[in-house]
Image (cartoon, rainbow over all chains, first blue to last red; front, side, top):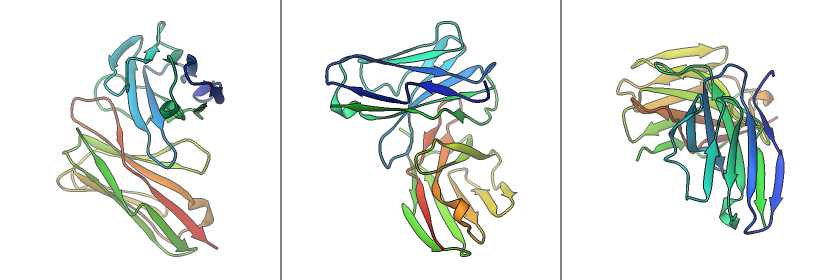
Length: 116
Length: 111
Protein backbone atom coordinates (compact mmCIF):
# COMPACT_ATOMS: atom_id res chain seq x y z
CA UNK A 1 0.00 0.00 0.00
CA UNK A 2 0.93 3.62 -0.30
CA UNK A 3 1.07 4.25 3.42
CA UNK A 4 0.39 2.89 6.87
CA UNK A 5 -3.23 1.91 7.37
CA UNK A 6 -5.09 1.34 10.61
CA UNK A 7 -8.47 -0.13 11.40
CA UNK A 8 -10.92 0.60 12.72
CA UNK A 9 -10.61 4.38 12.48
CA UNK A 10 -13.05 4.81 15.36
CA UNK A 11 -13.96 2.44 18.15
CA UNK A 12 -16.44 2.93 20.96
CA UNK A 13 -16.23 0.38 23.73
CA UNK A 14 -18.05 -0.08 26.98
CA UNK A 15 -15.86 -0.17 30.04
CA UNK A 16 -14.65 -3.71 30.58
CA UNK A 17 -14.79 -4.76 26.93
CA UNK A 18 -11.77 -6.02 25.04
CA UNK A 19 -10.67 -4.26 21.85
CA UNK A 20 -8.25 -5.11 19.05
CA UNK A 21 -6.65 -2.45 16.87
CA UNK A 22 -4.97 -3.37 13.60
CA UNK A 23 -2.00 -1.80 11.83
CA UNK A 24 -0.82 -2.51 8.29
CA UNK A 25 2.65 -0.99 7.88
CA UNK A 26 4.27 0.06 4.65
CA UNK A 27 5.34 -3.06 2.77
CA UNK A 28 8.94 -4.00 3.52
CA UNK A 29 9.26 -1.83 6.61
CA UNK A 30 11.13 -3.71 9.28
CA UNK A 31 10.32 -1.54 12.29
CA UNK A 32 6.85 -0.95 13.71
CA UNK A 33 5.87 1.27 16.60
CA UNK A 34 2.69 1.86 18.57
CA UNK A 35 1.96 5.19 20.27
CA UNK A 36 -0.87 6.52 22.41
CA UNK A 37 -1.90 10.14 21.91
CA UNK A 38 -4.21 11.81 24.39
CA UNK A 39 -6.09 14.95 23.36
CA UNK A 40 -3.76 17.94 23.18
CA UNK A 41 -0.66 15.87 23.95
CA UNK A 42 2.22 14.44 21.98
CA UNK A 43 2.35 10.77 21.02
CA UNK A 44 3.63 8.54 23.80
CA UNK A 45 5.60 5.41 22.96
CA UNK A 46 3.97 2.10 23.78
CA UNK A 47 5.96 -0.66 22.07
CA UNK A 48 8.37 -1.45 19.21
CA UNK A 49 8.81 -4.42 16.88
CA UNK A 50 11.69 -5.31 14.64
CA UNK A 51 10.16 -7.79 12.22
CA UNK A 52 8.21 -10.19 14.45
CA UNK A 53 10.30 -9.58 17.56
CA UNK A 54 8.93 -7.22 20.20
CA UNK A 55 12.13 -5.53 21.32
CA UNK A 56 10.73 -2.86 23.61
CA UNK A 57 7.42 -2.85 25.44
CA UNK A 58 8.44 -0.46 28.16
CA UNK A 59 5.67 2.02 27.32
CA UNK A 60 2.72 -0.33 27.72
CA UNK A 61 0.80 1.18 30.64
CA UNK A 62 -0.43 -2.08 32.17
CA UNK A 63 -0.69 -5.80 31.61
CA UNK A 64 -4.06 -5.15 30.00
CA UNK A 65 -2.18 -3.98 26.91
CA UNK A 66 -0.73 -6.57 24.57
CA UNK A 67 0.76 -6.23 21.09
CA UNK A 68 1.84 -8.77 18.52
CA UNK A 69 3.28 -8.92 15.01
CA UNK A 70 3.44 -12.65 14.36
CA UNK A 71 4.60 -12.63 10.74
CA UNK A 72 6.59 -9.45 10.80
CA UNK A 73 4.07 -7.36 8.88
CA UNK A 74 0.58 -6.68 10.27
CA UNK A 75 0.41 -5.84 13.96
CA UNK A 76 -2.43 -5.91 16.46
CA UNK A 77 -2.68 -3.94 19.69
CA UNK A 78 -5.11 -5.54 22.12
CA UNK A 79 -6.51 -3.87 25.19
CA UNK A 80 -8.31 -6.06 27.68
CA UNK A 81 -10.97 -4.87 30.12
CA UNK A 82 -10.88 -1.32 28.78
CA UNK A 83 -11.02 1.58 31.22
CA UNK A 84 -12.04 5.19 30.62
CA UNK A 85 -8.43 6.31 30.91
CA UNK A 86 -7.65 4.18 27.83
CA UNK A 87 -9.60 6.67 25.67
CA UNK A 88 -7.10 8.13 23.22
CA UNK A 89 -5.89 7.95 19.64
CA UNK A 90 -3.68 4.94 19.04
CA UNK A 91 -1.11 5.60 16.34
CA UNK A 92 0.94 3.05 14.48
CA UNK A 93 4.15 3.98 12.67
CA UNK A 94 6.60 2.05 10.56
CA UNK A 95 10.12 2.71 9.38
CA UNK A 96 12.31 1.04 6.84
CA UNK A 97 15.49 0.37 8.76
CA UNK A 98 16.65 -1.96 11.47
CA UNK A 99 19.91 -1.31 13.23
CA UNK A 100 22.11 1.72 12.80
CA UNK A 101 20.74 5.17 12.18
CA UNK A 102 16.99 5.24 11.97
CA UNK A 103 15.13 7.30 9.44
CA UNK A 104 11.64 8.74 9.40
CA UNK A 105 8.70 7.07 11.01
CA UNK A 106 5.60 7.01 8.82
CA UNK A 107 2.40 7.26 10.78
CA UNK A 108 -1.00 5.82 10.07
CA UNK A 109 -4.21 7.81 10.53
CA UNK A 110 -4.77 6.35 13.99
CA UNK A 111 -7.65 4.65 15.76
CA UNK A 112 -9.69 6.88 18.04
CA UNK A 113 -10.81 4.77 21.00
CA UNK A 114 -13.57 6.03 23.25
CA UNK A 115 -14.38 4.02 26.36
CA UNK A 116 -17.76 4.78 27.89
CA UNK B 1 13.31 8.78 32.17
CA UNK B 2 13.89 11.08 29.26
CA UNK B 3 11.70 14.17 29.04
CA UNK B 4 11.33 16.47 26.07
CA UNK B 5 9.76 19.89 26.58
CA UNK B 6 8.72 22.42 23.97
CA UNK B 7 7.95 26.10 24.24
CA UNK B 8 5.72 27.85 23.62
CA UNK B 9 2.72 25.57 23.95
CA UNK B 10 0.66 27.82 21.68
CA UNK B 11 1.61 30.53 19.19
CA UNK B 12 -0.74 32.81 17.29
CA UNK B 13 0.87 34.86 14.53
CA UNK B 14 -0.26 37.13 11.77
CA UNK B 15 0.22 35.68 8.32
CA UNK B 16 3.65 36.71 7.10
CA UNK B 17 5.22 36.88 10.55
CA UNK B 18 7.96 34.52 11.64
CA UNK B 19 7.52 31.64 14.10
CA UNK B 20 9.94 29.71 16.29
CA UNK B 21 9.49 26.71 18.56
CA UNK B 22 12.12 25.45 20.97
CA UNK B 23 12.74 21.91 22.13
CA UNK B 24 14.74 20.84 25.19
CA UNK B 25 15.66 17.33 26.26
CA UNK B 26 16.62 16.25 29.76
CA UNK B 27 19.25 13.93 28.26
CA UNK B 28 21.79 14.08 25.43
CA UNK B 29 20.22 12.75 22.26
CA UNK B 30 21.48 10.52 19.49
CA UNK B 31 19.34 12.40 17.02
CA UNK B 32 16.20 14.46 16.86
CA UNK B 33 13.32 14.47 14.43
CA UNK B 34 10.61 17.04 13.78
CA UNK B 35 7.01 16.23 12.85
CA UNK B 36 3.99 18.31 11.88
CA UNK B 37 0.46 17.30 12.78
CA UNK B 38 -2.46 19.09 11.18
CA UNK B 39 -5.71 19.34 13.14
CA UNK B 40 -7.40 15.94 12.98
CA UNK B 41 -4.40 14.43 11.22
CA UNK B 42 -1.43 12.28 12.06
CA UNK B 43 2.22 13.27 12.56
CA UNK B 44 4.14 13.78 9.32
CA UNK B 45 7.92 13.63 9.27
CA UNK B 46 9.72 16.88 8.44
CA UNK B 47 13.43 16.38 9.13
CA UNK B 48 16.06 14.49 11.11
CA UNK B 49 19.11 16.12 12.71
CA UNK B 50 22.05 14.01 13.80
CA UNK B 51 25.22 16.09 14.20
CA UNK B 52 26.05 18.53 16.96
CA UNK B 53 25.34 22.08 15.77
CA UNK B 54 23.65 20.88 12.59
CA UNK B 55 21.48 23.32 10.65
CA UNK B 56 19.12 22.22 7.89
CA UNK B 57 16.77 24.26 5.74
CA UNK B 58 13.63 23.32 3.88
CA UNK B 59 12.33 26.33 1.95
CA UNK B 60 10.99 28.65 4.70
CA UNK B 61 11.78 26.20 7.53
CA UNK B 62 15.13 26.21 9.36
CA UNK B 63 16.01 23.47 11.85
CA UNK B 64 18.89 23.59 14.34
CA UNK B 65 20.41 20.99 16.66
CA UNK B 66 22.28 22.35 19.65
CA UNK B 67 25.98 21.84 20.25
CA UNK B 68 25.28 19.68 23.30
CA UNK B 69 22.64 17.69 21.38
CA UNK B 70 20.07 18.46 24.07
CA UNK B 71 18.10 21.18 22.37
CA UNK B 72 16.70 22.03 18.98
CA UNK B 73 14.65 24.68 17.27
CA UNK B 74 12.39 25.11 14.28
CA UNK B 75 12.03 28.54 12.68
CA UNK B 76 9.48 29.36 10.00
CA UNK B 77 9.97 32.53 7.99
CA UNK B 78 6.98 34.45 6.65
CA UNK B 79 4.28 32.08 7.84
CA UNK B 80 1.44 31.04 5.54
CA UNK B 81 -1.97 29.59 6.34
CA UNK B 82 -0.71 26.19 5.22
CA UNK B 83 1.72 26.21 8.18
CA UNK B 84 -1.14 25.75 10.65
CA UNK B 85 -0.72 22.71 12.88
CA UNK B 86 1.16 21.34 15.86
CA UNK B 87 4.90 20.94 15.56
CA UNK B 88 6.53 18.18 17.58
CA UNK B 89 10.15 17.44 18.15
CA UNK B 90 11.00 13.82 18.93
CA UNK B 91 14.28 12.75 20.45
CA UNK B 92 16.04 9.42 20.35
CA UNK B 93 18.45 8.24 23.05
CA UNK B 94 21.65 6.40 22.20
CA UNK B 95 21.09 2.68 21.79
CA UNK B 96 17.34 3.09 21.92
CA UNK B 97 14.83 2.73 19.13
CA UNK B 98 11.91 4.66 20.55
CA UNK B 99 11.20 8.32 19.98
CA UNK B 100 10.22 10.53 22.88
CA UNK B 101 7.93 13.23 21.57
CA UNK B 102 7.92 16.73 22.91
CA UNK B 103 4.86 18.48 24.23
CA UNK B 104 4.29 20.23 20.91
CA UNK B 105 3.71 23.81 19.82
CA UNK B 106 0.36 24.56 18.27
CA UNK B 107 0.60 27.24 15.59
CA UNK B 108 -2.40 29.20 14.44
CA UNK B 109 -2.28 31.84 11.71
CA UNK B 110 -4.35 35.01 11.71
CA UNK B 111 -5.06 35.84 8.04
